[in-house]
Length: 163
Image (cartoon, rainbow, N blue to C red; front, side, top):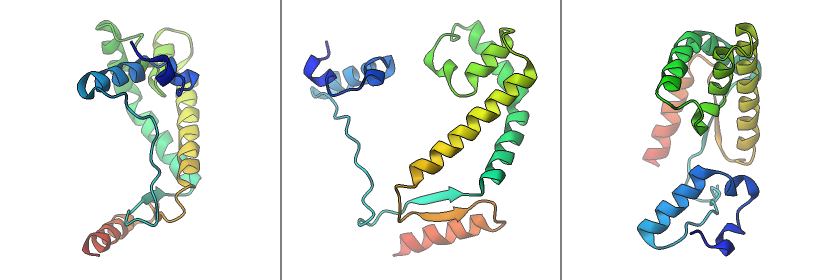
């Protein structure tokens, strides 16, 4: 159903992603056009405000580790319920923390190993986000480890809105 010349513009991971394929078909059925996959980068010369919430890595790692410990038991309950209603083999259940919770519940890894893997995966996600933001040279960086970061954020947004 999707034209081959359109698919030729996709890489292999996009071609093998059922969610992307279904979404492209939905857009085509609604608009009659195949969606463009090009994403426009933010042009800093335009009047865009890009805010990067940042902090030292150690701070972010400590926060995500604490969060992981806090959500562990509710996560297990959620994964068990999702498995019961037939969602075990869906793409979202292979996400960054769900896949590891499934491994633990299936007896493939210990609880300590599961928590360690989730923290490791989330640390990697933090690093990838930091790398992604490097392309925004004109972003406003606000350090969330500072006690008054919320006031700094509010002031910056207010100043942007008011011109």
